[in-house]
Image (cartoon, rainbow, N blue to C red; front, top):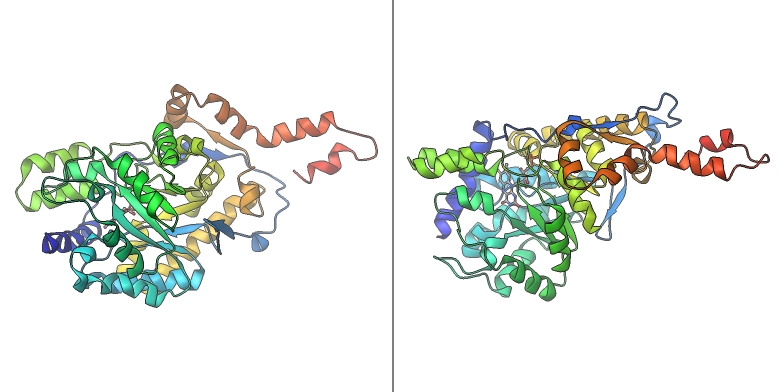
Length: 394
Ligand SMILES: Cc1cc2nc3c(=O)[nH]c(=O)nc-3n(C[C@H](O)[C@H](O)[C@H](O)COP(=O)(O)O)c2cc1C
């Protein structure tokens, strides 16, 4: 079992780097548009991107998504990512730690992250399916989960929810019954904050509320439209000649709730949100943050960069930051709080979905945030302090 998990970890990385594993149906970020401010009154170079996530101050609202670990060949990738996490003050996740929980000899590919990023906010990672009884293995014990946390001296624990991936995996865990109770129990036993994290199929309003009732501290919506774990499993099945599982992986390659929609749906739970899944530019990042995300998760672009060099990772981060700042300036936001008060118009298929799901009022409010503030000011207007002056403060 330990060798099988180890082998799978390197196959995922190689497949992601060598083949196109993105979901054919894109996340739909272009459905989310800012209302341009011709006179934004914001200095591009003075924009403040600092934020706080689960009590930790961060320099940028960028989360380096949980990607890898568990094979000697990925040590360098994790080192490059961790070096950038430390340099830029970012939160970073490691990939599932199952491999090293089962075989401590593989711990180096994870421990390298804390060694390289002594002060970064690091997030441990285990899977929800491994918290319950499966046909061929027992649930992780509390001691095993704590081992994963200690391995990287983590600041938080992510529990990934990946039923789709397991269903498309030749050797996948098929049981998902009991995960809710298992997460609830684990959260109660944890001293660290627990983040519930999807891996490409998104989190709905109702599931976000369920997760809140389990006591999780944050949700990574891991929406559809970016890297598809289902596509990765299809490629693994293909190489094994397992046609039936391969077809499942291909069929469900773009199953799920697109990321921007999921940010709005999961926002109902009022928990800190990470928007991961298909974020491919600083403009996508700005859209996610304006919709209510606290952090934006980036997976594949950072994996690809880290497989090349530390400098490439820096380039991805710096260009994302530069692009994000332009969206902020043009929508009149000089910090992330103001970004969440900008006018955002959701159209197209995303709007259709959200409307049918009962989010019409929220969409209207988001599209008219500035106008509503102006109307409130008009009502309070006095000659001593004319509205025109106050427009500058909106
Ligand atoms: C090669 C690869 C391995 C991954 N392994 C994990 C994992 O072990 N645990 C996890 O929670 N997510 C894992 N993910 C999912 C990512 O954290 C992220 O949710 C996904 O890549 C979507 O983001 P993207 O579209 O920016 O790539 C993996 C993604 C890739 C590409």
